[in-house]
Image (cartoon, rainbow, N blue to C red; front, side):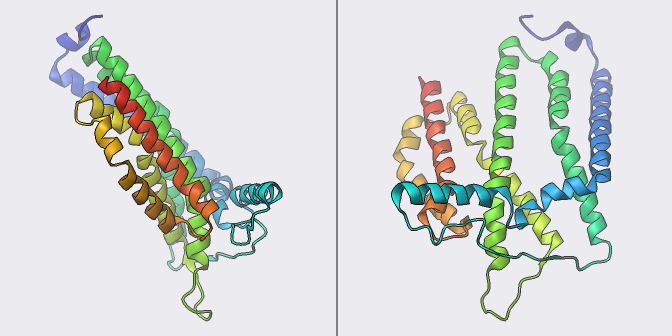
Length: 273
């Protein structure tokens, strides 16, 4: 098929609108079914969501193993590095009568959207693909597929690295020893969602760079000339969100961001050529 599909050319506006309505209804049904299932499996759902506030979370165990490996290999002093053996306690409370139920619904709905996202993308692409040329469909598949994968990687990075350290630092930070922290469940969930969304968007950097380069709006030479500025900005951002003062943890947080920028430069350079 060299151009638009025949049924797209012959279909009327109201037929397109009716098909769009069917697509939206199917998406809502699938998302709501998965959300209801997530709501019913409350223990499993919140075991995942609340896991980062526990000192037994897998991230701390990973860092403890890496720290021990560094000590045995380099004889480094890892006294300030986060380890699973460092005891800490983050107490979550609820302050409103219906808040826990509302949060339960919010988290279940978010899980429904996330888990049904492959089907949502499929339905949306199936709706718009007949109006695209063959080469446009190929670009659309690469763009949407790459953006989706990178968002999931960013969300996973937030869940396993950024958010646990954020909870550990902010949840135990005190301006005075007699001022205790009692974190609300709403604050915990909101911070998790915000960081997940933010890191997911940050990891879209290579995909957006590719798109801007395709539109002739971005040059690799421009990105190279500002590399030092970007590295400094990445280190500052990593220092702000990193809960410990050791260089190892700072490197773990900042290295993937720097790698994304370097990958974006390579992608843009290839597109420019």
